[in-house]
Length: 397
Image (cartoon, rainbow, N blue to C red; front, side, top):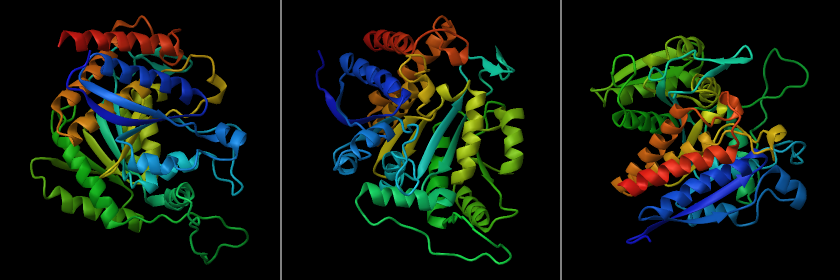
């Protein structure tokens, strides 16, 4: 029996394929917290995605965006993407959901923790072995989430989600290029860069520094030796860094970073970068932590946030109860931390830490692992194991 309950309104968007399966495990964690603490969650589930579009002609029900904007404290998304589901203009069916929310709610920061837990092997050359060491991979990468190379697609999706005329960039000409041309503008603004970079420095204040030396460090990753947008991004970074004298400012080019993140991940504490560079580098970072099934994320703005595993809908595995739910469970952990900090609720932040501890205990024991990290356990087996550990920890408080 809960007393003094505080309710948070959570919208759950299961989406397509395996997104529906991992969403159930995310909800299991929410239910566990609700049943064993003073924190309650009013959950609203909305059907959405590519398969929903093929069946109904709509990506999600009318009014769904407005509900997410006006009647939701946090959002969980399973995954979007269904074979053959495309809009008439060629865009991914379901893009109004995932991309429309990112742009329409101004979720300017994609936050990706890259952490290797004890007991998680790496799959390489068809087998499993330990490549990187637990404790030496623990960084957070912040990717700018509304500008850059994906800006036009994001804006178009947000317009569609809100029933507006869809944005298209003005026609451009490119001297020296002949024939059919396709292009995507890559706008990077000082405003967009500043708010992302400042969040990176603020997140660094809550961490324990880089694994190699304990130094609180924020690394700016760009291609400022070539592109003007990145030159503005780096200049903005330097301006913000000067306001945090207790935090080391670090710089690198994206091509070199792709080597360093695999060779010396222990150097990195907090990383900030642009949209496309962050998209690519965080998926490489997922390899260090055991694969996409371990990769959680938060899409965070000043007023709204949604949380999702980043592994996609994996249609070939859908309906088999086999995919790894830990990315989804850790996305709920991020949600608890976000809601706790936003509402000055230290207890909810502590609940988030207990979720992380429950995941760590489960993996360390190593008895129930999914196929992607060398085991045979089912998605629901792993979800129940972690939920049971969490329940015990909540009852012991």
